[in-house]
Every structure is written in structure tokens, then in C-alpha cells.
Image (cartoon, rainbow, N blue to C red):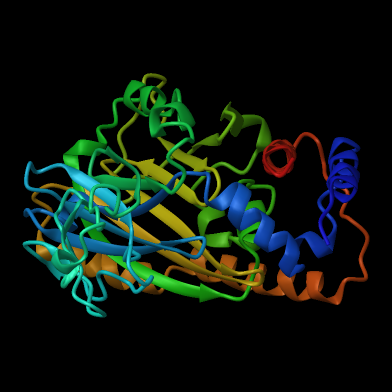
Length: 366
């Protein structure tokens, strides 16, 4: 059972240069605390603006076990609500689509697109019934370029505060997210804890041995790789492409004449990588202590031909780097389940980003 003592012991291990103990990746009680105090308090990518172009369009998501519906209201604004009826806890929306209002299938309670209760059948026969405070429970929603993000915690930081400095960093490189639209997407079910995926994706120490295809594209000399903490809740990479690599003319040289691969991890479960004129979002939905649903979406410039998008879709589904990461995470989780290895020793120069995010998570669990 997770207690203040065990949390402090884990923090001591991290401060001493170690990874978290294996049971932090397998124990259901740890996962339950993380759901409540980390995953439900952070910002998550859920969909893109192209999926909700019209008034009444809606999208369903699950954030740490909380069912969410995101929709476009009558004023054209995006809103998000907990997808639970205020009557008897049935889901209000069970299929995505377009609706003039939201009606629960169970007893017919209906809600306006602003979340307010529109009608409760037979309530007119109840003199004491007051619909005023019976609207759907709202969540925070933010739009960044064509991407839509949600935070279940209404009292938590805004998206701008959570990612403070990241938008400016990306814009300063001359990259415009708003010039892109959602393109190819694919989802993988991975039998690992969400932190296993995080640990793997926020460092490139493993790239030379695990990702030979990627290593042939970008410089593997760590002295030329920038791996930095950008803010409390995000980290970023800047890695130069090798000389002669242009990815079919996709890459654009920056001020120093070199082209770069840029990557950011937005805690607790989303990455944004960009190079050339497109970017990718990778989002992690933690569905259990030892399983995640990982979705990768490529955003392409407006006007990209359909044939090019179809080609990118085929490439995404067979992408060797992602498949290599899936295999790595599966094997690491199996080792954590064995529970016999002591906490790993980290290399401060190559794995400091892991240490930073371990501390963030442990502080949120305080």
C-alpha cells in the first residue's frame, strides 16, 4: 500500500541517482493513487479540431478512468464535460456524432450543448425539483493549433501554465502548428505501465542500440544532442539530422544551416515531435497498472495530397521505431513484474530527464 513513508523512500532513491522500484510499475494501489493525483490533474491530448468542425459535433475520451465528452457548442466554442448523467450515472453520450442536444439513453434526461440540464422527464410533477445545479460536470479544455487538450481538474493549472514556454520555443524555431491538419493515425495496445513508456521515450540513450533506422538519420553523439528540462511539466530534445539527410526535401535548415529533429514530452502522457513542415502527437491512455493505449497522429500541411497522406498512413503502421519501442516496453514491464531486480542505477548525464519527471510525479503524490 502506498504511504508517505514509501513515497519518501522512493524519492530518496531518485535523489541518489536510481530509478523507481519495480513495484511502482506494477502495484494496483500505486496506479490508483496516480490516477487520482497525477493523471486526473494533468493535461492530455484528446483529439483535433478537424474532428469537431460543426456545432453539435462531439468526441468521446477516457482520462484515467473518467469518461469525457468534448463538443462544439452553439457559439462555436469547444467545451468538455464528464460524460455521466446527473440522474443515475449512465453515460450521456454513447456514440460520437452530431447532436442538437445531449440525451441520456437511460431515462431521457437531456442537456444543452453548454452542459445545462434541458429536460428531466416527469420532473414537472416534483415541486421541489431544481435543475439549476444539475448540469454536466465541466472539465478544462484548451486548443493549441489544430490540437485539443483536456484536464479533468477544474482547479488545476491552465494549459498555458502547464506548458509555459513550450509554445514560444516552437514558434521561435519558425514552426507553425496552426498551418497543419490531422492526417494519418494509428493505435497500439501495449502491455506496460504508463511510466515505462515515459521512461523510454524521454531519453535517446537507447537510440543507437534500439533504433538503428532512426540512428542513421540523426546524430548520435550526445555532445550534439540537447536534452533539456523546459518547464516543470515538460522536457524537450533537439537533435541534428546527419549531413546529407533531407527526407525527400522535407527538412528545412535552421539559422545555423543544420536541420533538426525536435521532440517534447508533456507530462504525464503526450509527446509532440516536429521536423520539416509537419508534426506528430503521441498520446498515452493508461488503462491499467500494466497496460496503455498509445495513439500516434501525424499532422500534415494544409493541402497535402490524399495520396501522400495514404503513403504516410502505411509508413506509420509499419514504422520500425515505434514497433521497437513497443517491444522494449513490453519486455521491461515483464521484468518489473518479476520484481527481483533492485532499482536501476541511472547515468546523470544521459538520464537526468527521467530523474526530473520522477520527482514531479512523487511530488504530486505527496
